[in-house]
Image (tube, rainbow, N blue to C red; front, side, top):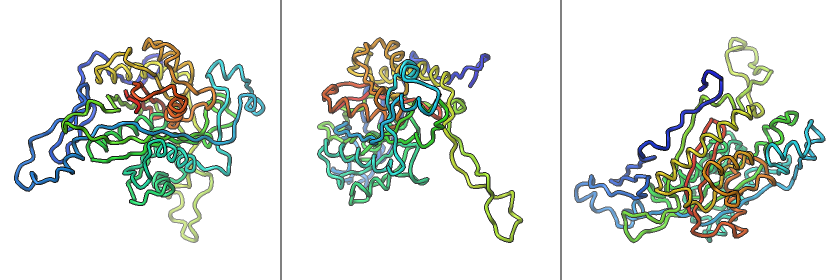
Length: 406
């Protein structure tokens, strides 16, 4: 949407509104309500002896699940492109880029590299940390906007991992918000569907859609993959999940902002060859591909610094927590000035903000799990720490989640 000045203004609910559940799942007589109480409420709607004969194990799978983040991993390409390297192909320099973005280096997939292989490597590391075998995985969620197959990359990752039980695997496309949506989806599958081990992968190769002559966009993006293993945990009280690793979340989208950040389809110049029957010429679609990333950086910046802190505040309110409860702020790594502005709004000191933007640039859906993995393996993030995380970007989409590591 645009106001009289033409500035993009997405509709964002006020923090002061009364909380209403973010999501509900009704299945086999159980209602899950995500909110400040973080409880699974048992319904009495199931009637009859046949329904009452549900096995105890199946009932347990449906209602006695909390979820915890128990493993993480990441992988980046070998090719490193510095700001000085970019200054040789576009009119820019290290100071201009670093002052405006905080980025100094980024990793780029070379022509022989595969995004799927990066995702598999990150997933394997997450499984190793969690001490979970691939055959124990119940679901693979691949959060990406740059799959290497039009029909999605998740099944290929499932195959490469050696998941012998053919678990469900599918892609989630939400660009830089994708990983947060993946975490929420994993929790819903665990709490409402009885899944045990859900692998959430964020991986993108936006370098493949960058105009390398556009200094406003080519300086921003890098390629990477990160993964987290979300695991269902049994509870002593079948209707209680007070120790969940996902406390609350807040998700939004506004298609009105798509004009500020997109990579739309474009038709190829040549028509299909239809042989001697030319009656369909001009009617059948031409071959198509995606254009390079088009971005209005100023509007995206204004959008992010406005909606991200509001979303985090809403998620905290739903969780019954305050900003002082946060051990770490982990945002999508898009621009250091955005990270600083959000931290200031939430009154969080810079030492509690996780940032690896300088080394990798904007890696889209991979940025949050990549930064989390480095923070966990360095000992910065420890079991029991509370993290406020948020993604924002193309769509436009944005969302936040309050999570606990370990």
